[in-house]
Length: 282
Image (cartoon, rainbow, N blue to C red; front, side, top):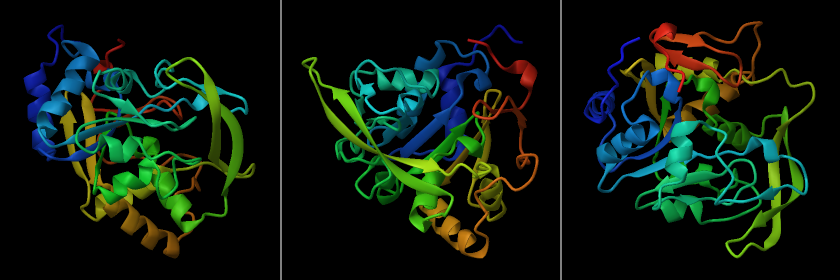
């Protein structure tokens, strides 16, 4: 492994080559270790993303707290760490960042559209007023930085929209901690899978998007990076579901492999890289 860290300028150049532009609204799923050694770590990656999309762009990251699924959980937006990796955690803690108030699937955002994405509250993050649908309304791009389509939670929005029979909504009574230290009720609707559900294979649907030429693919350091529009995913997802209701479901013993890069790791912790030996254990 090279001891010379990837610089901010190198990351910026790679993101621009991928097609990320000034003014974009971009929702980023990421893996810092997939990129390799980065000078300045996750802060450099966040700075690079902001420099490419500014002055009018909005950076959005998942700040999910999936371990808080139980009733009576208390969500502390200012203190609860993101379960979605170091890049998302660094973005969450920036002074200009705001976080949506959702028990398990909160988002943090920075930029002109931050309020639209994070300030509309409701029992479900998947509702028409929730942050995921705001990505659709704002014509956002989705970036998979060093992770496969398996991590693309926006695809759950499509499942919700077409009302897949293998998922259902469940009400959970939780609490949210307010800035003054008190708590208030946080009614929550979670989007759960039924017991006999075999699991998602979002790589299968992602491969369809790629075959249609709707995904830009490049590299950032050692990480394979994919960029596509939320609206394209929705339009194609609805169309493909009507033809094949199992389009988002794992139907084979192995998950669908991807043509670009090497997928390593176990389910829920996969990376997509050029060379597994160049991953950096930060």
